[in-house]
Structure formats: structure tokens, C-alpha cells
Image (cartoon, rainbow, N blue to C red; front, side):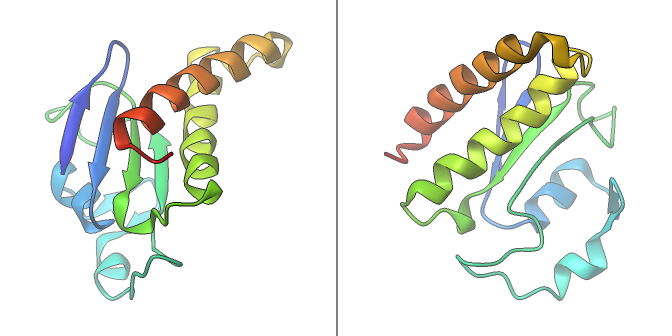
Length: 124
């Protein structure tokens, strides 16, 4: 698992959804069970967790919210961009207090963070 501390969040890049459970040293992450993850047959087309954005499930590891991207799901297609943007939209809503009157700010922030991440991951 590669963890990159950003200004207000942690970007977590794993090769399997198990990396997320291992990183936070937990058996449960926001309603999802490690044991279900362990028996899930991950492929580039399907994963127990392709991406996730949420609060830290273990404040001893980090107090920051996170965006997790399961690198095994990346296929070198437009779907990778959609996955990254989707997770940053979740985080952007959180940072803007779920205030939909800030729609353009929410979308713009998610776009900017997605672009940085997509370039960092060399997706396109």
C-alpha cells in the first residue's frame, strides 16, 4: 500500500482491497468485512472494493479522510478516470459539507484532485 499524505486527506493506492484492511489494521471498514474481502476473487473487471472515500476507520493510523484506489482494477481505459473522479466526488461533498448549493465548487475541486491523481498514476 502506498500512502500519500495530502493537505486534507490521504491518498491510498493498493494492489488489492485487502491492502485497505491491512493499512488500517481492521476487520471492518464502513460496513464491509475483511473476511468477505479475503474470499472475493478480484480481477481487473471486478473487485470487492474498486475505490473508496470515507473517514479513517482507525484514528491511530490517520485522522484524515481518505481516497483509496485499488490499482488492480485499473485497465488503462476511460473507466479508470471515472473511478478516480467518482471517489473524489465523494470526498469533495464531505469537504463542502454536503451543501449542493456549492455544486460548481464541489465538482471543480473533485476535477482538480482527479487530474493530479490521474497524472500521478500515469493513467492517461
